[in-house]
Image (spheres, rainbow, N blue to C red):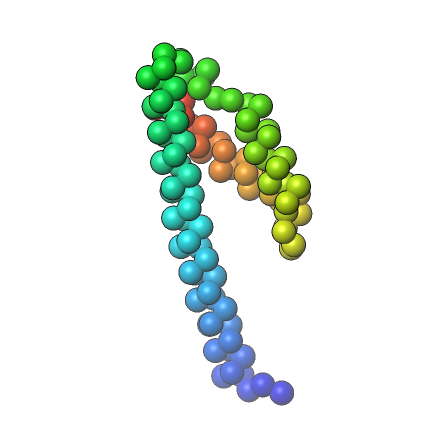
Length: 97
């Protein structure tokens, strides 16, 4: 049996790893947001009005492709919910560009 100190240290180690993953996710989400903004700017420069810069078919394709690849313990529904939030924020950047 592990001592309480060892168990607490293990929890601390796991939390530190979660913090690293969170930082990496945040950096990747920021990168995705910058790309979305750049796409919005390119669409604006091409003369597309704000609403026309959104591509619902592309968004649906992205969500379904990722949902089909949902890694355990995530399931397809969880991936759809997560990506709905991500795409919502990116959509705002595309339209506002």
